[in-house]
Amino acid sequence: MKKQATPYLTFNGNAKEALNYYQKVFDGEILAIQTFGEADYPTPPEAENRIIHAQFKKDALFFMLSDTFPGQPVETGNHISLVLEFESEASIQKVYDNLHQESKVLMKLQDTFWGAKYAKVKDKFGIVWDLNFTKE
View 1 (tube, rainbow, N blue to C red):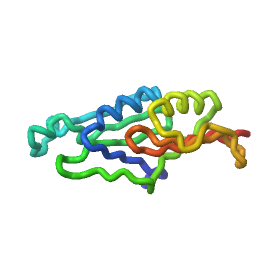
View 2 (cartoon, helix red, strand yellow):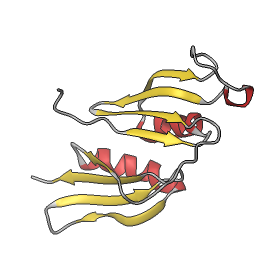
View 3 (cartoon, rainbow, N blue to C red):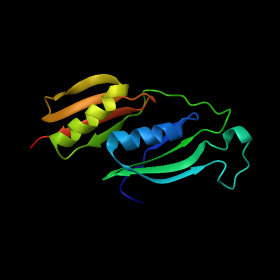
View 4 (tube, helix red, strand yellow):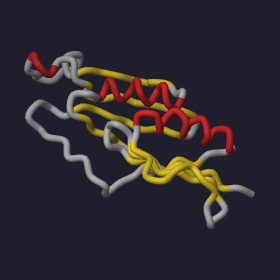
C-alpha cells in the first residue's frame, strides 16, 4: 500500500468546469480526462459529456474527480476538507488569492498560534480547502 491517500472529488455534471477552475487556481496540470461517452460503458445520451474520470496534479497535490451518473445526487457536506501544505509564503498567498475570489472565506489567510500562515476556504463547488504554511 502506498503511504498516501488520494482525494476523489465528485460533481453533478460540472466536473469539467471544476477541473478547469482548479487548473487556473493552482496553476496545475490535467493529467487525464475521460467522458462517459468515451468510455466503454453503457451511457444515456445526456451523460455522454459528463466526466467519468479525471486526474489533476500540481507538485505534490494530486486528486481525481468525476461527475455522477445522471440520477445519482451529489451531497456536499462539511465532513471532509483538503489540507494543502505549502513551502513558502509566496506560494500560499498566490493560491489563496486565486481561490478566494469565487469562494466563501471561512478563515482569512493569517498568522496562527501554531506558527503557521493558514486559511480555510470553501470554493464555489462546495469543496473546503485548508491552506497551511508552517513557518520555521
